Length: 119
Image 1 (tube, rainbow, N blue to C red):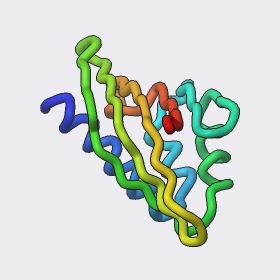
Image 2 (spheres, one colour):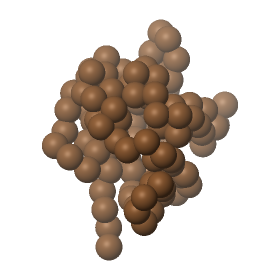
Image 3 (cartoon, one colour):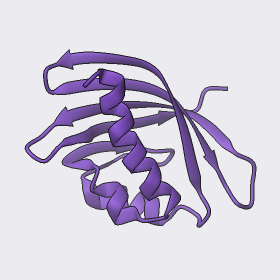
Image 4 (cartoon, rainbow, N blue to C red):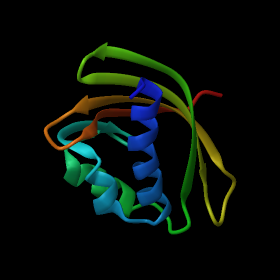
């Protein structure tokens, strides 16, 4: 499987859970010790990821485009993406997202997630 295919597999699951407003399912695609940096102070672990997405408004959806990928090791894939978050009641927000995927015994999971807003 190519690096882009690995990213798409994991991020399609993430997107599906975000779009369905299922924060626990979103968190399940992260490692137990994932570093998560949304647009608020960072957190570590699945509980923080779930809390972040639980606080997001209903109707939030995500669309992403992969910009770059790098295979850092056999079990590590880096992705740089552009993500547009659409809201039911306000204008869309476009961000840049860096993710590091780690191959675990379970599957490929997100071990680092960092959003940045570039104007």
